[in-house]
Length: 270
Ligand code: NAI
Ligand code: 15L
Image 1 (cartoon, rainbow, N blue to C red):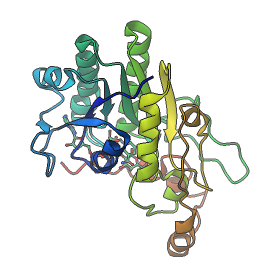
Image 2: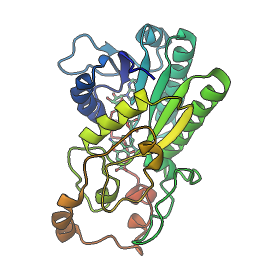
Image 3: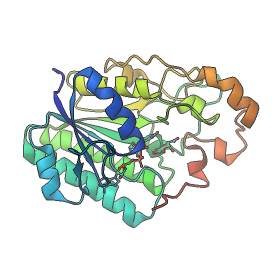
């Protein structure tokens, strides 16, 4: 589809939102920023909760597409996840549907939607995109909900979504697990651009990572959108393995895609 011009970026104050709002304007997008907390250095950003349906109605007015990053990004209480990730994502989809002009949403899903999937050993097949949902946390479960909500809005209302099961998008990989699931910020922006511009995506689910030598999952549905990752975590491997050792399949923290979320889920500090 022709590149959308005005794109609403929710979660713009967060880690990923910050990395992406630094990169996406170079692709020609005009970003409208939205977050619960003020976006540093961006006085024009909308500061509102996803619970605020009036603010959402204004936020989606005249936007061509939405990148939906806002939400609780780690394990938390059910009430907080219900508020931001379930109700909040539903509110956003309803605002997009009723606005009429929004052609597509790119939804930040997560590897934790399938986090209890055993990770492949060397030589095993990569995990396919149609592997069943196996959430490792209430957080992961909320991403399963988001993917299914996207599917419903495509089938029922014709609103397209690309759901990206993001691995770990940070400036550098900081663990041996991240060598397999890392997505460089530059590749993150490439993938968002592909997700915003590919033709006829309906509801498409992809994994989001760089072309890592130690990749665990199949990137072919992302590549089918036109995504061509340029980065690989391998230059970081020797140092991280020397510090932390190779992953041990007998260690339950290291046996699944979701890593330590499967045993000691990190709890959202707020
Ligand atoms: P983050 O926690 O740094 O940012 C999330 C942002 O959402 C925050 O700025 C927060 O204020 C905002 N937010 C939370 N609840 C809100 C609400 N009710 N209304 C409005 N804004 C709200 O998380 P990060 O790392 O930037 O992740 C962004 C998205 O990508 C999240 O949905 C996360 O689940 C997803 N993701 C991120 C990964 C990563 O590697 N960074 C990996 C997999 C998924
Ligand atoms: C996620 O879904 C989190 O939002 C992010 O902070 C990382 O923990 C990432 O997964 C991961 O699996 O490393």
